[in-house]
Length: 103
Image (cartoon, rainbow, N blue to C red; front, side, top):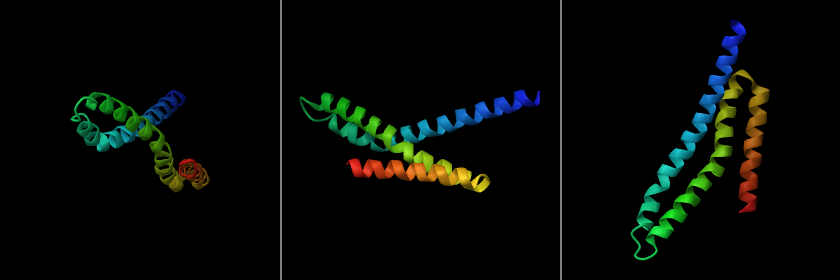
C-alpha cells in the first residue's frame, strides 16, 4: 500500500511539474498576445501576420520557458537536495547561454 501511494505521489508531482511548465508557457504567450492582436488590424495582410506572429510567439515561449522553468525548479530543489538543485541550475544556465550565443 505504501509503495502504491509513493508511486501515486510521484506521478502527481511529475504531472504538477509539467502543468507548471505549460502554465508558464501560456502566461508568456498571453503576455505577448496583445501584439498579435494589433497585427490583425493591418489591412490585407493582417490575418496572415496575426497567424504567423502567434505561432512564432508560442514557439518562442516554449523554448524560452525551458531554462526559466529549470532555474525555478532548481531553487525549490536547493532546499532539500542541494547537489541536485545546483546541477539543475547549471543546466538552466547552460541553456540560457546557448540561446544567447546562438542569437
